[in-house]
Length: 333
Ligand code: SF4
Image (cartoon, rainbow, N blue to C red; front, side, top):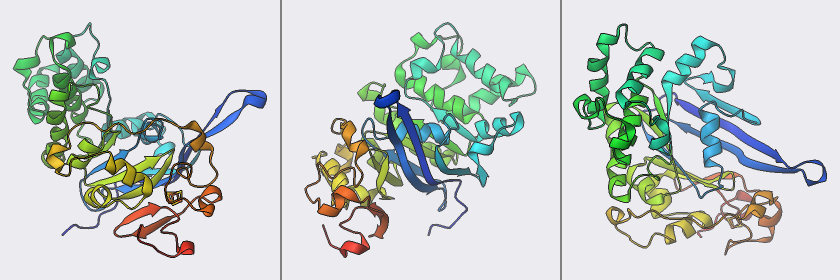
């Protein structure tokens, strides 16, 4: 039975607004719209934010990493407000606790430096070791966790390793500070399809072996289904459905999630490993006053054009859709 813990991460009413253009051409884009979710309340987990390009998921990840200031709302990590973590000591604590894994492993490592030097630099800058002589033993532990060894990488340059190996290395580097949370933004999209699943599986293994929570940001529902405990579906800045991954992807309630699910033709989850590309961006959807999906939704009603739906609990998940709003009466879609 899952136990209730304090969430390690909690966002409340979190929004990011970008102002683009100047003068009369000025426009306001709500890239993240009142996002509210928590992680870790029932133990270590992999929580996925899934959405197409332009859904706001990467903006959300940047705010969580402290790289972007929210326009409104709050982010709490282990009881501390992320935006108020300012001093050097506190920033160092946060950077150790919350580690990013980026999309392109070839950009993580300088082509001019040997990859083991990069590890040494991380160990020294985070003061993870007292003396340089301790480095090999320290590094070996983390390389082992990702299925590599110091012998394999020592003295090698990034171009001598595959994309899959480099991404394993960047995950090992992220683990060196013993973080509570990895924020992995599209971590396998730049890796060869043949190696993708082995890296995805690694996150699942690390959740247990290194007791690390993973916030997995992806456009790919297939890998999300495979590794997540819970998932949030994002559409034009808004989380429209959030709950256990089997509930949300096997029995979606929100009309948008249903369309995504139907783009995965294979019912057997083990065969769903091909990436699923979601539909193209419609920037006017961001500007809609009501539900962002109203222009494409087969179930749209008059209210959907003008009023943004609030989250309601339905069948063990949160869903933002007027089909389930109290004012409409509950229906089975
Ligand atoms: Fe469709 Fe209306 Fe639900 Fe939006 S709120 S998904 S338009 S039924």
